[in-house]
Image 1 (cartoon, rainbow, N blue to C red):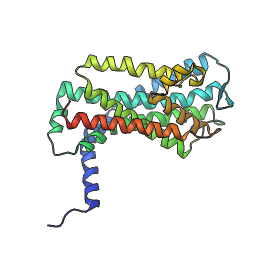
Image 2: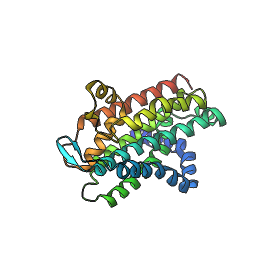
Image 3: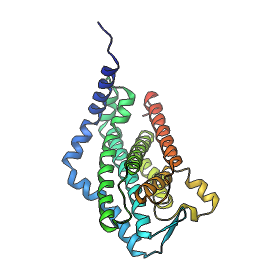
Image 4: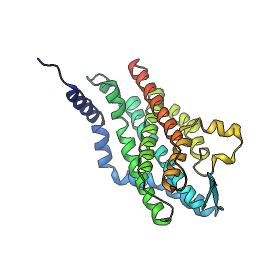
Length: 263
């Protein structure tokens, strides 16, 4: 019997990814209205409360002064990529592991570990990309002179959604109970939400605080998305590289947890 070529192996991998993601895709299709409402409510409230409610002055970014509303919209898009990706992936995986035990059944199927990891990011990425796209449309309608749809913006949002979906998997695989998942969100996700350059420039903080915040992935995501969306100063490719390193690190952690059955 001839050995399968590289093309056959790739087809098998994507088939496995689809098999893993199938139930999540069906879940999203049947709950699309609720997903849209829940995904947009918090970002829109942030936009109203911080963007218009505070009536803040102009912000200087990389030597360029921009209105605060234009500064905050890309930050909210970055924040949306975090909240939608993380919550969708972690909550559903946590329920499947600890309540329905369906994740254990899937682990017994002849599926590759990488296919399981990538397949479980699909729901978070789809929901997050949809939310980020709607948030960009709202931002463009409000401030068309500053918001730009560029290839680097698409790449930055895609990488952000993928990174935070992997982080959601990491949290779900490490969680021993629903309460421990809530604790993880309170200790890790909530501080990132408000401190990682989404609502203010990280450069305004002391150097020691900047060093701490640059060690969190949302800071790099905010920098990349803001630079690509505003498109008025040079794009920080180093931040995109750091964000990719975070994605690789979360992937390797998930792979270790699944390989060693730490789930």
